[in-house]
Amino acid sequence: MATNAHGRRARGSGRLALGAGSDPPPGVDELDACGIPALLDSIGRGRFSTAFHRFVAARVAIDQCTAWRVAAGQAPRCLVSERPGETGVVEALCRVYAQTLHRHDPVLRGGIGDLPTVRRVRLVEIGQPDYRRELFERVRLDEKIVVHGRHDDAGYYLSLYRRREREPFSDAEIATVASMQRTLLAALARHAELREPREERSPAAEALAVNLRRFFATHPARLSEREAETCVQIALGHANGAIADALGVSTHTVNTFRRRAYRKLEVGSVGALFGLYVGAVGD
Image 1 (cartoon, one colour):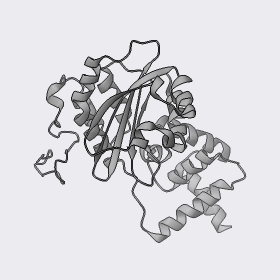
Image 2 (image 1 turned 30 degrees about the vertical axis):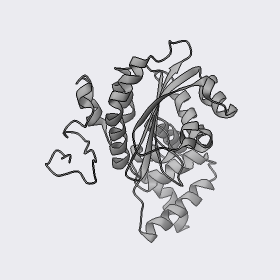
Image 3 (image 1 turned 60 degrees about the vertical axis):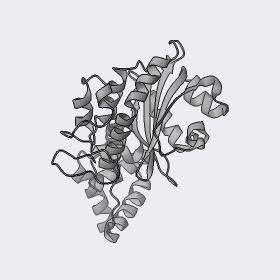
């Protein structure tokens, strides 16, 4: 059974104890050591998505990388969304995927099994027209390697994309991804665990969240839905990384929502933001 950096055994059968300073997970022996420290150090932090993409791209040429936590009864939760030089494109793709198109994903429809799986998905194999058009054709992607497996009660689903102008993935490249599959899935699971939005159990805190949502949603400044929810999360004391996870966007986008909302509300700090709500309640 694996042990962590403090010598404690990882809970659960075969569970990987990943984190800064921990022993390398199974599968690392097949990889070049370069990149492992950066990947491990990024787990649970805002730079994880970028570090994860760099780790994979150093070994297999890819143009886009997305990764998701998939649990029954919940919308997929984005853990990685990278498309170098086109951040806005991949964020838009992830939003529409999480909102609707995941229902048409042939991989998810087939189910995520307990054993890690690696396979290629080509554009010509995708029959659902909206999924094919929005996630592949419009953004010039032609194929992807998918890696998926389960950890505890959730599935983890990684897609490594290649543009249509590139050569197709070779058998050797697919084998390289297969050699990394346990490392990649374990890193995703550990990151998701560390960044899991904490459920607030206090009735008073739940009531505050409800009232904040009502306040910002109906404010005369006419905030967008995302700007209003960003204000709610800020007022509740959540950090940018947690807000990004909750909204399924990057921390850069959270900063954009914050900046726009602050400008509309004419405030310049968290204290002033919360003061708007307190003043309205006092009135």
